[in-house]
Length: 462
Image (spheres, rainbow, N blue to C red):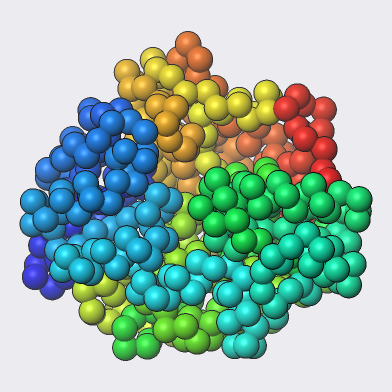
């Protein structure tokens, strides 16, 4: 092994900004990288940056980035000892991790059995409750019939939320505020779960109207040592899709912050977690918090944690996967200042967040003090309609939240992604930052919905 005694060669089973971000840390560690790419990404920045590029299929993800045989063949042919899945695609697929192991390839992530248990959101909820983490009122398992779901909703009281047991990324959730809407919402949730995840099972739990979304970043090695790297607030969302993230979570009492982090580490120990994972919580107005789910991968918003701690999370993932100990202890973790991330998506926020892919003629991202850009955009490139619309992440750091907000406002005014059909979320994100509720950290997950009420393309809640 080379590169801090980890791996000589890593295949990156992803694309876009996250693929490039992983490749950069690998280069700093002296690790050779293999970039796989679809036909649409043949000339992308990652294929030029990596040490080797391998074409694995046509543009649709199912034929390329989700094509497990093609990925394994590319890794074996290139002599890759490990695969880093990034986020999305196969990053939380226990079957993929098992297939990697069967071919002598290290999957950079938690063990397959841990992913399988935590990937079932209903099972994860039960496991964490047994470990002492607080959970919202709801069923102990899945609701396998509409009658069962309604009986549960009637017992815990409306509103409730129906979630896919195999879900993730906020997809397919249905909020139900009155009994008459439950049957339709239940059917829709099951249908969406089947299409999106190949698993129609759903579960029901209490829905908190005025909620904040706070998460804790945890890293644990094979020897059982674990650290948390503070909290992140991901409350600014549209239909459960995050738009702005920040750390540390504002308006959260220090006692609650410490308790939440302590419980997240306890949860990681309870399942024998390995690598970087994120414990997500719902926080009520009075500060009470409840476990929601665990993401068994690197999060899109991981840069804000890196900005305030100085810890390279990809480096820690690689070290843990190689069997090395964490590079730091809990008493060495220091949270300094505030960091905010804004996701720049190729979408039109003033037309129901309609995807706006296409050719980019001009592409300028911000610079300046304490400003980080994670992107794969460039003039002349085409944003493909086959993939997620995330184009760039703008991340800033400042000594306090007020200065971080002002720095982000300045940064967003510098964003230019111009093309015949190109639109981005940058103008809308500026509106969010200027909202008095956000500035006072008094916002909830309903903030974006309230702001968009007068715009086209927004659906009324159930």
